[in-house]
Length: 436
Image (cartoon, rainbow, N blue to C red; front, side, top):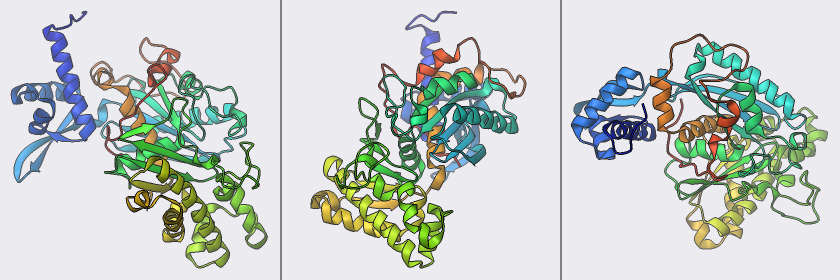
């Protein structure tokens, strides 16, 4: 039946979506809190919650709010599932979560992502199908996939924004490639943006409306949150802090320039400094461990990285004046061995008023920040109508099989473009609550 704008049925649908949106944004609310948030009457909220519970969209559990007995309403874990896929330069991590914000399965494996896009997408497809199958989730319950890639994404075309950073991915459309393999909507973003989303929603970035998440791994990037929104820029290249120039006579960077911040801080450039004394199988994780154990060479390298990162952070402070910087990646485990030099450089190079307002903290999500951010991206982008349709319009069906397929009557290629509107997407941070 076609709903007429202003009809009772369309009004009822709008109220359903309003309640679902309130619950999705808060994670869990009592019915009284839903009424205050939505402006709906207590009776209307009670009826809607009962309907949503019967359809399997929400779950209701007893709770104590302010010392009084109440019922907490949250999205049902059985209402649907989402998948997060995170490509690093040397790893692939996949997680499957439900709408109750529980991680049902998660796995990471090493991979040379830079070498071949096709191999990367094939491995991701296989890992997604394997993990989803272990959860027993039916295909009809799989709502979408969040995808993180270690490079800028052109928001107009969906292409990788710089082929010099990932030469093996030249000419690829990551969103379309994965959507065609999995047969579900795919929402794609830069991995540092997803790390920022993850840490802002439930990590050490909580409560900060303006922050920068700095990921230091095989490469270096920043995810920026400005006024509560992930900021990507008109071309999707905002936050490429690894390619600001520190020394125009410095080492040649993989981007083609000289003396980029990345050439003084990223693992691919820094680890060779220790090969003669520590061997060639050294990893950044091991360097951090040795530094914490007192190894003088590793402590010096970690401190130098922190000093250079601090110079980049000082530039961010002078340009954007964030209230918080979250350092992610393996280096965050070094604690004050790296954070101290970062803070010292900020104090030296940043405008004093900007430096005084800034706190520099380690990330709390470790290597999971990006994949959890990918899960959160799906929930923030999919819309409340999708939640209702997923819970109320799907049948138990069979288990997800090992080969890609399509959901309902909508093609993967059509749905693949659903992650942006007119090429511009604004992801409201805090629109979902953290996974556990």
